[in-house]
Image 1: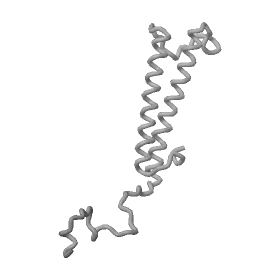
Image 2: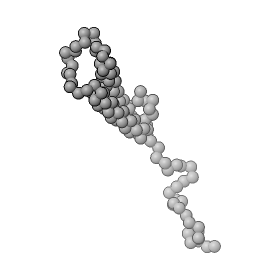
Image 3: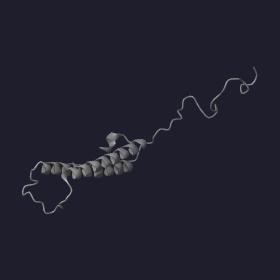
Image 4: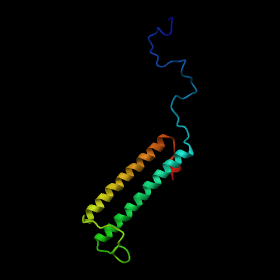
Amino acid sequence: MGDVNASAISLVGDAKKSSPGKSTAATPTPASSQVVTAFRKQLTALQAQSAGIDKQIAELKSFGKGETPGANGMQLHKGYSTESVDDQVRKLEEKKKSLAAQMDAIYEAARKRGIEPGQLR
């Protein structure tokens, strides 16, 4: 038969580089607590915005049903819009979807860095 390299069998890879007990797959390194804290801070801000949007949507829907918002009905610290209630609700729901997409992107970035979802809660 002769030389192994001259045989008709195809060899893939280099036998010198690979050793049988080691995996060549990249293992994510544990993330530092600073990185986890940064992701958690971003998520907390987005969740607070989402909760505020939920509250606004609930207030608009109750207003659309004819219920008075708040105890006295008129809230001087809020601006009033000439837009229909349905349009305002639709815009808020779109904004909430955008926030949800941002939160998903943060979770995905954290996952790629080896951070478990439980660490972000």
